[in-house]
Length: 120
Image (cartoon, rainbow, N blue to C red; front, side, top):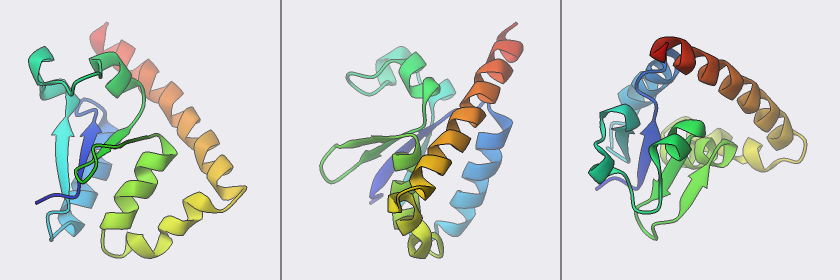
């Protein structure tokens, strides 16, 4: 059974590449990958909107139902994947976590622009 659910934007080319890589190394099936674009409104998680899920990367823990977003979501994924679990600590190092968050926010700006262009 997967340890976490990862909600990702299947329309985002960068997201698809990253998820494809993570899927290949997730031989134990620790992650359930959920393309937000393929969900009907009824299939969206309780308390979450499509816009909220698309606006920031989200991970849900299977054990307790807790949610992680943004850089914290990446840290959660890394903790369950081989190879990357050794590096997950970087998200808790002061300074490095903030740099990762700044980089992620820059990516989000590009992703919103790209999503608007696809919809236009």
